[in-house]
Length: 236
Length: 274
Image 1: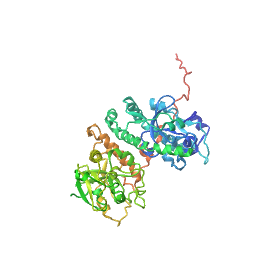
Image 2: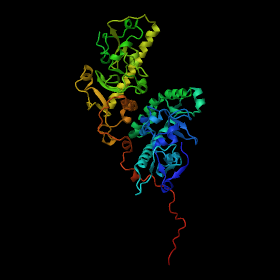
Image 3: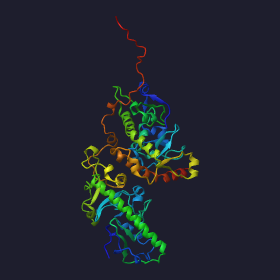
Image 4: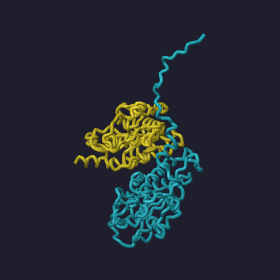
């Protein structure tokens, strides 16, 4: 999803401008976007929420926004900015590395993605105002990044637990769909799983977030058929 | 004969119910009550269909005669998009299980019943396997209702579900029998209270085997509220993102300070002075 990373100092020193999420290609075309646990309930209505292995081999929790890599994501132009996954709301602001996020969240480095906007719908905004304060547009994006990393520990813990105890299963999709769109393997927590096995290693105060996520994942899977229908209908 | 359960009471042409016995399972017509489903105000929800139902209908927790019951709200005034079209056909992508087994019903209090219809065809005699199948489905349904009832009880006991506050812009004067029926017996998700302020204990290992299910049910109830025309009253409006952050000033966190070397001290020597 991300291209080259530009650090904060360079970006602000060269007076880079940032634009709303819908100006960038990723928002319109990126199929798999990493998500955090807290936003799952909001996204479950639209996108299946699954795990998959990224190119490094780590397990990423992502929203599947569409199947066809060459077509725009279904319904994206009609969406509210706040209905987008947090990492897209934040774009082009980004963390330097999402895997570093999980290893040592205190070593956060935030900067910009080098991607230029696809089409500039307005003049955009600078990152810093003349007096050195962060502009409102940039602050919104920083808020989105911070919200994303807030439950990273829990996200990592949950992923480890469900994969270690083999409580996940692959999502079964029609073979021709998988071939046609070159889809990787997706994993979800099993339908009938013993929740106590998951929760016994998690602090009680985090139980509501985890259970909300597990319910959201179940709810979200019923949306897979809609994505397939949309992709197939588009190519008809 | 016993009175029909509350959720069936609005169906026309029903005079009551009987306990399910061999005679009641002999024959039944296909699609017995399909043409009258639009008279339903709400219908019970089975555990296994919860995740599908919440994509279409808001969940409603109602105090019944034997404890709280989890229902799907079908009232046209509750929904953004009516569940039934002008011809009385269900226009959702999913049909609740409880409507599919009519005139047979099970209830969380253990009753397994058949509704008595005052008119209509009696239908063909049914083979034994089919009767067994229906009986089994009703028992599974009953177990599902009971599990949801325990989960709802736990949520109420721990303060996650509270009696529903009357809606602010409620249409006054339209008091149909159904409206007054439900007022005072509906529960809503408690408005967001930080865990530390919560008077009852949260759900933890002490809450017993239904704890995780209760939390799943709560998540489903909250998710399904999006289908309501008028949301339940919440304590105060909260901006979603701020709500998640819980902090008011991201700048104080100084997240964007680069860890790299801004000033390079490696060449600096401190000479000892004599």
